[in-house]
Image (cartoon, rainbow, N blue to C red; front, side, top):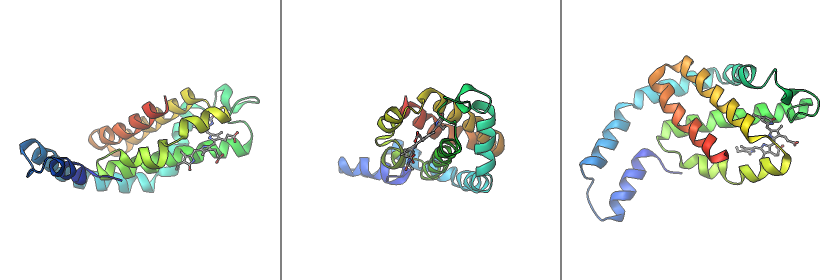
Length: 161
Ligand SMILES: CCC1=C(C)/C(=C/C2=NC(=C\c3[nH]c(/C=C4\NC(=O)[C@H](C)[C@H]4CC)c(C)c3CCC(=O)O)/C(CCC(=O)O)=C2C)NC1=O
C-alpha cells in the first residue's frame, strides 16, 4: 500500500532527485487537507451502517434485484451485498486518509470483476449503489471531503466496469 507521501518520495527517488516544486506542491496539498481527511473518516466510521442503508434504499431496494430471481434475493445474498458495500465504504475511507488509491487495487479490486461475473453479481447495479454511497457520504461530510471520497468511490466503480 502506498500513500500520498510515499508516492511523491518514490517518484523522486527513482529519478535520484530531491523533491521538485510540483512534488512539494502535492505534499503541501496533502498536509493542508489532513485535518479534513481525519474529520471525514471519523464521521464516516460513526455512520457507516446508516450510509450503506440509505444508499441501498436509494439505489437497489425497490428494484427487481431484491425480488425473486434477482441477485440480492434471499437473505444470504442480501447480506453479502450489504457486506460488499461496507467493504467499499471502509476501503474508500482508508484510501481517502492515505490520499492514494493503491490499497483499492491490492485489497478490493484484485480479482473482483471475475468473482462478480462468475457469481452473476450485476456490476451495473453495484456501481449504481456505490454512486449512491458517494452522494450520501458527501451530504454527510460536506462538499470538500465528499469530493475527496468521491475520487475513491469512482476508482472502485471504474475498476469494476
Ligand atoms: C474486502 C474485499 C472483498 C470484496 C470486495 C469481496 C466481494 C465479494 N462479494 C461476493 C459475493 C456477493 N456479492 C453480492 C453483491 C451484490 N449483489 C447485487 O445484486 C448487488 C447489486 C450487489 C451489492 C451492491 C452478492 C449478492 C454476493 C453473493 C452471490 C452469491 O453467492 O450468489 C464474493 C463471493 C464470496 C462471498 O459470497 O462471500 C466476494 C469475494 N470479498 C472480499 O473479501
